[in-house]
Structure formats: structure tokens, C-alpha cells
Length: 88
Image (cartoon, rainbow, N blue to C red):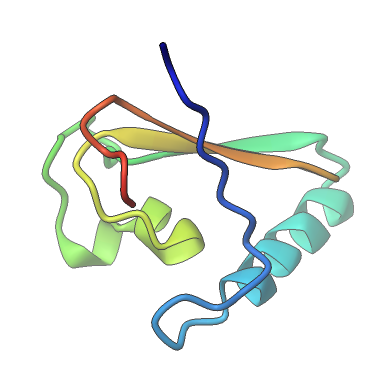
């Protein structure tokens, strides 16, 4: 019925070193002694449409849709989006 799609972060997308950004975030998590971090698509006011300066999810994962979030742990990461995004 449903098919899972996984994003690996291993290869850069569109010339952007996503793996390096993920590694830098994990270094910061370790420095602050945190086990994980949630990166939402929304900005601090919970707006669905955010200005380019607030595109945290796209910066970290390359996901440019309007609904999603990422969870980054020390050894794993996942991107959660709704059913509209089957190709991103």
C-alpha cells in the first residue's frame, strides 16, 4: 500500500555539500551534549511559506516542498513529509 523512500545525505545535491552540513550539525550536537535536533519547514512564527533566509530544512536536506521536517540524531537522520512529495 505505502512505499517508504529514504534520503541518504551521502551525496551532494545540486552542488551543495549536504553531507558536510549534516556532519557540522552533528558536531554541534555533540559539543552541546544533545542527542538530536528537529528541523521544521516552518519559521519561528510557524508560517508555511517562509522567506529564503529561513529555509533551514532546504539548507540541510535539499527538500524544497512546503510541508516537512527533519530529525537528526547522532547516528541517524530522517526527513518526514506528507504524501504529496514522492519524488523529492
